[in-house]
Image (cartoon, rainbow, N blue to C red; front, side, top):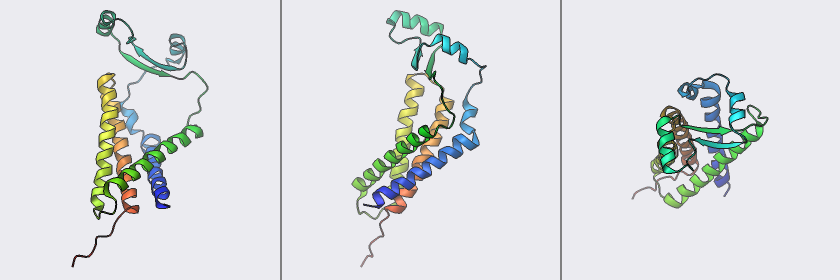
Amino acid sequence: MKRFLVAPFLAALAMFFWGFIYYGLSGIPYKALGTVADVGPALNQLFPADGTYIVPDPRNTPEKMGELTARGPLATVHIKKGHIKAMDPAVMAKGFALEFVTCLLLALLLHKSFGGQDCNSCRFKFCVVTGVLVTLFANGGQAIWWQQDWGWHLMTMLHDVVCFTLAGAVLTFFFRVKPEAKT
């Protein structure tokens, strides 16, 4: 039972530190972003409250939506108007909690899928393929259905697949099974 908590905790810790390195130290994913002047004051005027806004508004009639889409621009705006701290400890804690729950569920999947089977490489591959599957579906869907930039989503996908790879390595180590001697 102890390893069902320790292994996901350590796997989540590996994910967390990878995120710090990738987003915090390297800045690599931000190279995919366009540059823009300080539009904060204009956004405050255009968007009345915290929330997510899609331009043009998909609740328009199909005819109006077609006209506005053809004219452009298309945008998805996530706005938070309040006082937000950079590197907010509460956000970091919530992010780590998400990673821990993800690793806990991944450990459960591994246990249910492989149990006592002695295929350690299968466990690792399962984690990597699960990461690719989840990442491709979530980020690919954003890029396709909401017509968001592929560059940003590819950078996010790289982060996520490495997260699942790290989690897979940690979980495989803790849940490894020694092969039985053949007689």
